[in-house]
Amino acid sequence: MIEYQRIILADHVRNEVFARALKAVVRKDESVVADIGSGTGFLSFLASKLGAKECYLYEQSALLDLSRSLAHENDIKHLHFIQKHSTQVRTPVKADVVISETLGNFALEEGIIETMNDAQRLLKPDGVLIPQSLQQFIVPVVSDHLWKEVTSFDRVGHGLTFRKACEISCQNIYVRTLQMSDLLPDGAQTWDEIDFTQKNSPLRSATLTWIIHAPVTVFGFGLWWEAELQPGITLSTSPAAPRTHWEQIFMPVLEPLELRKGEQLTLSLSVDARQEIRINVAWDIRAISADGGERKHQRLDMRRGQIG
Image 1 (tube, rainbow, N blue to C red):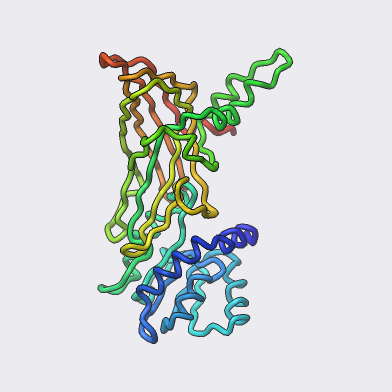
Image 2 (cartoon, rainbow, N blue to C red):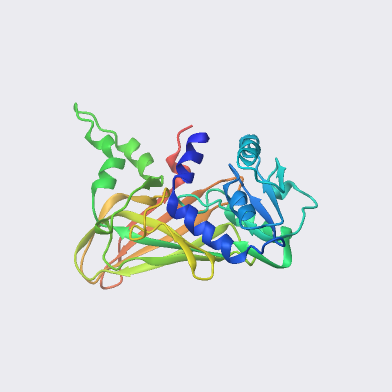
């Protein structure tokens, strides 16, 4: 747990963007701030240094004890430490600013949708949420190195085959660093948009289509996100953006898809991000020939990627 906190606090891009967002909304000696999933307390410490009247830190884990120690170490006052998830608090103090940095590499696996749905209950009528919105992007991966890594069972040798192990391995999503050269040129599409000022379902889905303009082999899909913390203040995990501790997601295919010019690649994506599930992703892939016929079809689901 402490190692993960060290990693995120060493992420200066993350820290600076959240600091800018807080600076834009915290009013000196007036603002009450609610920090959901407060961890070490870093965001509340920033808000306090900006002049927040009070900060309420909601953290279920033992990190709350560390946060108290760090607040004392830094002589930060007017903090209220609550060792519960905010959803468990029946009558929370209403806040001018509710902030929650509960974004995962896939964006949704830390339960941010349901957390932000409930966060509106903590907010004054004219209060502000951070982040305000989230966009998620997806693009075909056309370099083979990540797929070869995931399917290395196929290269054990010694006259043995591990086809079933490869199939299970492919039906998972992987945190990996993608380069722009790994991706279909100009192929990134938005697959999801979430406005946190509204209620949102943790069940997300989309169907996307790419027209193939030159022969290409697709080995999977790359995903990343961009969060708007406040108008004009964004944080992105795109391979083209300044690097953060977050990486991209690689979602493999079962078998590489060789696509010809004029064909279509269709992806249907279903995501279950309920807190009790954490994350499940299913992806259905079709290669459609130029005359409209289905040439290849693959169905993958993280539930089939588990053993035991």
